Length: 258
Image (cartoon, rainbow, N blue to C red; front, side):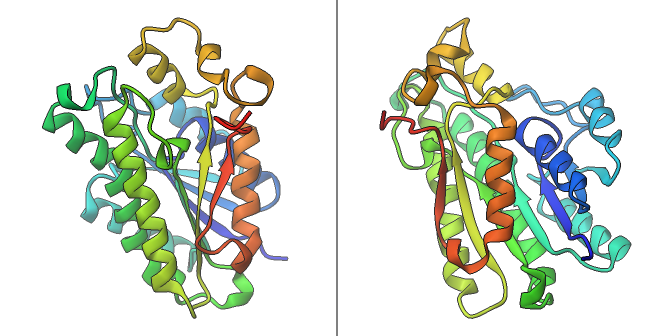
């Protein structure tokens, strides 16, 4: 069986990089798009060391692109299609958390930054990739998967910009799924709980916590998930086809339910 070509937006570290490794291990090609060459005071982005670590994996290639830029995203996706002749699936991982203040003390700039990092990156990737995915036959299982969050369905105190942005990202998934009905392409979301990544450490910092374990007290095991736990759900979503179309799959160890 010929491996799939999968574009991973924001896949330079954490869950995205782990997904790239798992895809490559099973014979797929992972094209990782991330802002490796960009520094931003709002959120610590993947850097050169992250890029080098991912590039060491056979079957993984990296492209430096800021997914907040619609034109740059379109160019990166088009270039991937030209190099490989096709893309079969896309996963939108890019996101950033900020907070520590109630909504009424949150600046307009912070909200706009949160929307740019979490929602527009997904929107731009979908707009760039869907015309190519729609050319693929159903036998190729073309799919678009977006990482949302438990914050896409719950209110988390002090994280208003992130909560609003992730709710909007869920909206992108639902809108996309409705538009894709009757086509070969499926779309779904995955909502991770507290996972041991840079984002969880940033969340802990926003709350003034020194130990990320405190953020996992409302999920099974009372400890953070590992990136591979969620990455395996991503692989499931990529392979599941129409049965998960339009769904937001929980990958949260029962966050808020146990």
